View 1: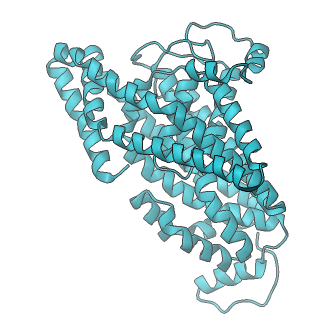
View 2: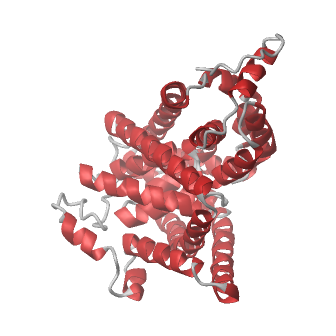
View 3: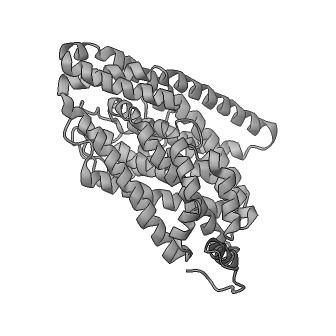
Amino acid sequence: MSKKLALYIFAGLILGAIVGLIFPSFGVAIQPIGKIFLNLIEMVVIPLVFSTLVVGASGIADLKRMGRIGLKTIIWFEVITTIILVIGLLLANLFHPGTGVQLQHAHVGDYSAAKGQKIDIVSMLVNIPPSNVFQALSSDSMLSIVFFATMLGLAVATVAGDAGKSVIRFFEGISQATFTLIRWVMHTAPIGVFALSAYAAGKYGVQVFLPLAKVIGVTYLGLAIVIFVLFPLVCRFILHVPFFKVFWGIMDLFLIAFSTTSSEAVMPQLISFAEEIGVPKAISSFVIPLGLSWNDDGTSLYLSVAAMFVAQMGGLHLSIGQEVTMILMLILTSKGMAGVPMAGFVVLLTTATAVGLPLQGVALLAAIDRVLDMARTAVNVIGHPVAAIAVAKWEKEFDERKLRAYFERRRGAEPSASGTSVS
């Protein structure tokens, strides 16, 4: 999302709130405009999810064929992502950023949670593999769609020759086309958010916007925990490297990512930095580019907080089992969607559709997405060299002497000839 579009969407939120507060009946009356915007968004979710997951799953199979390093890289990404998603979930349950104003009742989705119904875990698991794919597509059974798309992608990757490549190219084309549709739809977002904001303000009053401030605070708190608690603990007790010294070494890249909301802009420097501190070139040039799409730590934190925020605004009380299922959905879809424009927004839409959350809450989050995107992108950047170090350590190819020499150069000292491990 460009800076200009983000500014227009935020302006739509503010102007809509003002109009709704001054002319509440008018704000309620223009709700259909906001509904049209939500329908446009929902229109492209299913084809986008399906095509992107097929392509992403085929890539997983290719990575496994790349061998040991590829498999270890995927394992590291998945473990860290899961931990961070759980952190976000715990914070959202602790602070309840979306509680207080209920925009609308969530409809009964795959979890049957909106009415407090007890879910049958066995039945839910049995129904994940769809007996009829077209019925799953027509009924928005997102868990079944994700399952089938993933299995199809893995199967396509095993098809040798031009036949398999042709299928992948077909789904890549569908994915690119649907992302073009999303970009077109998002250009109508200022109007859609204006209408939704005016309706919310007209019906519920100014207090409806307080949760947006809370979700910013909870997200930033979670990102701070990732930087100042999770990563230091991982580096100290698992990787045995001084995290804050590594962090200081990429502080300039962190600030660039924060200001530009782009990880790609600093990828070459991240690869060079990883090599300078002891990661072999073969590993750094593989793990970091892959991490740009598969290791978005900041985005993972945001997604779990945002999903719970939307659930809380919809009055949806999820059980522990339902929250675990939501985490699994985020893990699957975030890996399939990552690395593409507006990936976080699309993953959130996918999860909301699967759970039966009100998309109005997702649309309101678009108004503050720029503020959240800056911080989550910066945290994404920190996770890349940490992942490269982890894989190099796992392969027993990390050069401790280079790490020590790098820190000594930064202190203005001569590099030491000692090969003692840095801890």
